[in-house]
Each structure stands twice: as structure tokens, then as C-alpha cells.
Length: 385
Image (cartoon, rainbow, N blue to C red):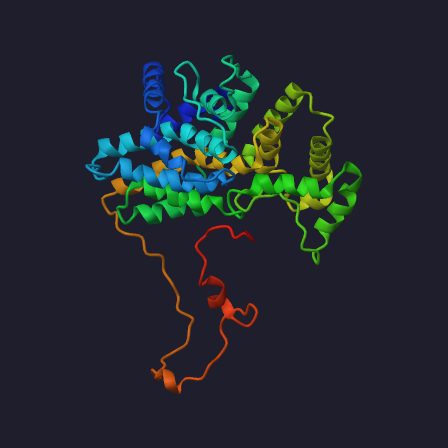
């Protein structure tokens, strides 16, 4: 709560990297270094042209961040502490431009380059939304602050799926940019990074304030598969401490935009009040979590839902690379090998093919099975032309 209220994302990045908040000169130097490293290689920008308009930004992120390893591989010694530090700083610095171009590529817009006079959060919003036909750009301080808080609240969060993926990939001494790409792929899954998008999908499904009681009743029915998204947390058995910060920011953004009367946001606020007062939710500690509010904030700011998980990845990048850096620096570091318990069949003897019976083990499609479907596939969209 104190970091979100009194600090900013750049200070949190420094804290995660070095274990302490920066002094005035250290902060200035760190922010200057981040800005100096924000540009990405022009040949990497060419890589974006290989993605078609309409490609999901997370698909682009996986490919482009993985491609960074081809630009920063030769001569990279991950066992050198200074090089690990440089890698961490470059990763954090380049993410806003990588993410913004992923969005603009997905909708067919031209690239916008970062500016030295803007903060980290301001630069991201500038590269996302700036219209090259209009040279004037003004980033509302409330929006910049909201984005900075979202980055801060998602910076690191124990051994979740994507963080563990980065560590497992990195344990083999793989290129760190490839490891981060693996983390992005893990985060892309709807069970991990898509929670705030799921909140909006749920709100749209509920439809209106009048429908809330019926949907709440469905959520209480143990025989009904419906669950309220954005409530409760498997780690926080009481209220998610990040949620209170995000709740306050959510109301500030809605007030700034004058969207208090927007049907979707009215629905969200009413659902919030019911959950905070209903004994069923209180007894089970199902309080609104950070995903409930962050999805509403991003939607209110005009961020498309396809970018929600990208912004999560931007936030978590510092956590991933710090965990990677910590792991590689450990003297007892060795390749990860999670334990596996075999539950398959016991000893079997080999039978030659002519003596085996045909047993259907594959899905059937018009009697041809999966092989009949895959034979001519090249990934291209088919047409009747």
C-alpha cells in the first residue's frame, strides 16, 4: 500500500533489482538509463511486419520478445553479474515499446517512438494512443498514475505459473529473453493472466443491475458452474491488499471520465457493494480482488481487452527477470527437474505390428480421424476462391 501510494513503478523496479529503494541520485540515474535503453533495434521492428493485422498482441509479444534473443545472444555471459544487471535493465526498458508496437501492429497503425520527456507510464500510453497526424499529446496525470499503479501492483507475486516457467526455462542457462518469452506464453493462458478480462466478460453477461440478484443466486448455488470472476484469491484468505489500492484508483478514473452513469460501470459498482455486504461472500472471504478493479480501470481508459494481458506482462517483467537473475546468481544453481510420479501401465512386452489389433484411440472427423484433417494444413486460411 505504501509503495502504491507514495512511490512509482521505476522505484519498485529498482527495489526488486537491488533490494532497497534508490536515493535521489540513484533514482535519477536509473530512470535516465531506462529511457536510454527504451528504443528497440530497427531490424526487430521489421519482425513485426510478419504478423498479420488482427493478430493477438500476446502472440506478437511471444514472438518478438523471443526474437530479442537473436539480437542479444552472442557474447552474453549470464554468469557475469554485470551482464545480468544490464539484461534486466534492458528488458524492463524495452517492454513499453515492444508492447505498444504489438498493439499498433494488431490494428494496423503506424509505429510511434518513445520520448525522453515522458515518464515510463506516460511513454507507454503515448506510444499506444498517439495520432501521428496530431503532433500535440497530453497525457492526463490521473491516467498515467493509474497505469503506474497497475504496473506496481502486478510487479511480482510469488511462484505463480509464469514465474515458475521463467525459472524452469532459465535453469538450463537458456537466453534470458527466450525465458521471458516463455513466461509470456504461460501468462497468456486464461487461467492466469486473463482474469481481469474475464471480469468484463462476466459483467457483460450479467447485463444490467436488475439482473444481479439472479446471477448472485447462481454463484451461491453449488450445483451451478457459474462463478463470480474477480472475487476471492487463492493466496489471500482475507482481502487482497492490492484490491483496496486499485479500488480507490478505479473510482478516481471513473470520476475523471464522468463514467459513473455508464451501465457497465454502474453494474460493477453495484456488484461490488453487494459482495461487500452479503453474508455469503463475507463468510467465505470472497472480496473483490485486484483483477475486478483493474479490468474496469483499463476498460474506462480505452485500453482494448486484447491488451489487458500484455499490460500484465509489462508489469510482471521486472518480477520475472529479477527471479531469473536471483536464480542464476545462486552458487547451488542447477537445472530444474520437477518430480514426476508415473501412473501409467506396468511392464509390457513388444508386439509386432502385424499381430496388433486396431483400436480407435483418436478423435474421429467424418470417419477419417485427426490425420485426415491435418494432412494438407499449412496454417493458411482456406477460401472457396
